[in-house]
Image (cartoon, rainbow, N blue to C red; front, side, top):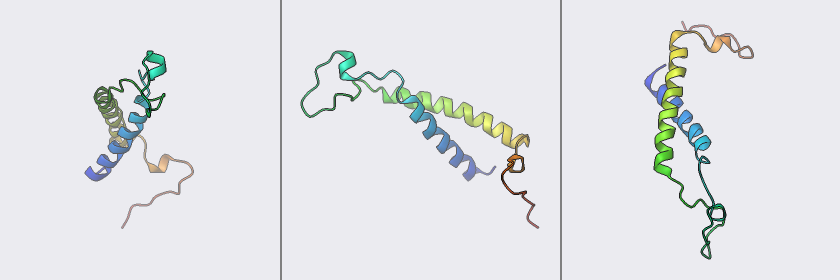
Length: 92
């Protein structure tokens, strides 16, 4: 895997993990017992703690990418192992 492919895969993994982590620990104004100001959404989180979620997302995505990179670079799984794809021949 070259550098550009690795960055692209990490970027995609990071965004997928972010969307999985975003709902963790969020509480709406109704759940927190806080009055909602006029013009604000009632379901908006009171304290989203985005910086903490970005840190957790980065750590989880790094661990997942390291596992993915280890599997791909070892040759344990390749594109030829996917049954519905055609067999790839090396370019000559």
